[in-house]
Amino acid sequence: MFSYISRCKKLVSGMLSAGYDGFLVTGRSNCKYLSGFTGSNGYMLVTSSGLVLFTDFRYIEQAKSECPHVSVTRIRDGYRSLSETVAKFSLHSIAFEPNHITYGEHKSIEESFSADVSFTPATHIVEELRNRKDELEIEVLSDAVRIADSAMAEAALCLVDGIREYEVADVIERALKMGGADGTAFDTIVASGPNAALPHHKAGDRVISEGDSVVVDMGALYQGYRSDLTRTYFVGGSDRSKYDEIYNIVLEAQITAEESARAGMLGSELDGIARDIIGGYGYDSLFGHGLGHGVGIDVHELPMVVPSSADRILPGSVFTIEPGIYVPGWGGVRIEDILVMGDVSAQVLTLSPK
Image 1: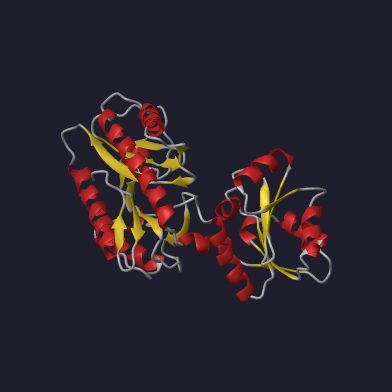
Image 2: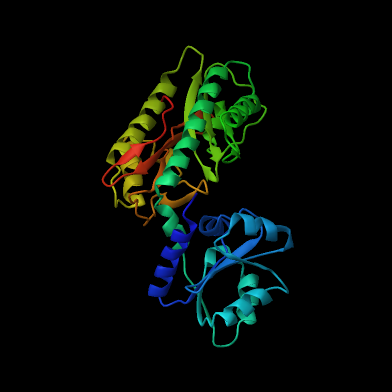
């Protein structure tokens, strides 16, 4: 059982230290992290006096079952239920998540409050709590990684001349289900030949042929958490010199970054280690995405491991390292592992052969 009460206490402590007496959580994944609620419509008010989850009629009984540690309130007349709760708790300074609310929603909520209630943006507060996983989260994520490893092994066996991309994706998704996954972490990517130069190509009907590089990127959804794994394969053919050259550069960049990762390092610092290696071989312009990202409830979350990132990789952070080189008209190579940061260095959770 995840420690929802402990998570809420950490948020309350930070909230009070920042001078707020309430925090409105509107991000769906953030609500799930704090409450366990899995419905598609709801938001949460966190205070030192109590925790209130607001949802519509469809999810009232579900919320009561999933979230026994919170008070569940039905949404009525726009934000009337919220404003009544704010008045009941005598709240005057409420923080909200600006990245998880529309302008119209913000305006409606603010207008529902009395004039003496301030409504102030506070960015990435819950996301920063989510950055550091506890032991149970790491255990669940490790299981999600194992399921993906097993499915990747099935994919490697079926990559032969004549099979279509979507057929490989079907094999992967069946293997994920058979391995215990609740679903896929995201749309499975199988990108062959020239399609492998498209980092987020979706599996299509292209026939995989001898001489193709094939990028396979997939993950398992397991107990609410997601894994993310990429491997690149070469299918037959007599001339693999270009593939081997690019593959070995990407592999060098990845292994060096994994071995260099340290607790407290900025995401931008780690990104730069791999980027400098790829740039040293003259392929810097063909590595156009970040080196990695955090993984958890969402497949992309803090810490971001990108050139502009000021996120700290902290003990308990679970994140990917996934350098790639993409050559238009030819194909590409990407290799991705999931790591967990320890007190000093990182442990690679992914076991799929490279």
